[in-house]
Length: 243
Image 1 (cartoon, rainbow, N blue to C red):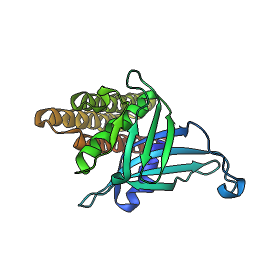
Image 2 (spheres, helix red, strand yellow):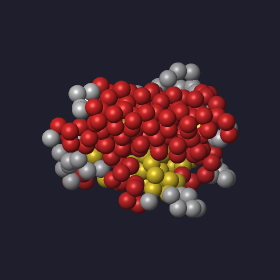
Image 3 (tube, rainbow, N blue to C red):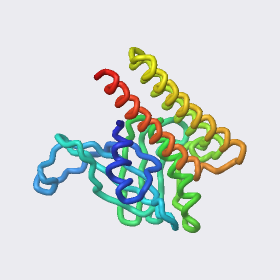
Image 4 (tube, rainbow, N blue to C red):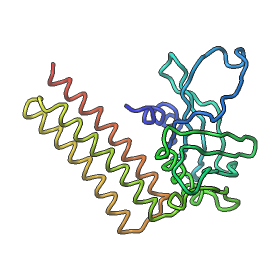
């Protein structure tokens, strides 16, 4: 299970929330924090996560989640409501860049994502989530490439990434467990086909109804979770037949 899927399962699902997007980041300039203030926990991984409650009215939050060295647990460190977000700075509107800044009512952070693509996906979903859930006083998105804020392009981009991921998982697992007995192999192929079919149907439904990306990010999160569940099921099946 990927780190992002684990974060969704361990940090958000228990609170009846759904993670819409997450990006692994590092600070542009590392803060100098006294040893005693950090508790001596050493190095850590940081993720900026966007989530929404399942219950209506929906509440959207942006959460800083960390995983400290030597532990597998993910913990919340800071959290803001989406209404507290004032500005998203993409740094350079003329080229792809992994850097971005987030300004809240009471905080300002400068981040570098793992890649320009990760940052782009996060900013896309964050922008459309703001359009959907904030009726007034929407945050500014400055120095962002137009493709990140354009609805049609954003829809295509999100679904292309999702399809690539799902197909990669499908092919990898089918190839890895091709040695299974005929019955187990048949079940694995059937499950893989079902996952692929679900992606295609969701994409077709979105295009036909012209839904906005505000709903697309929820579909994307569902499909990514389905892919993770498929991987777990395939692994259990492989272990069963191995025994």
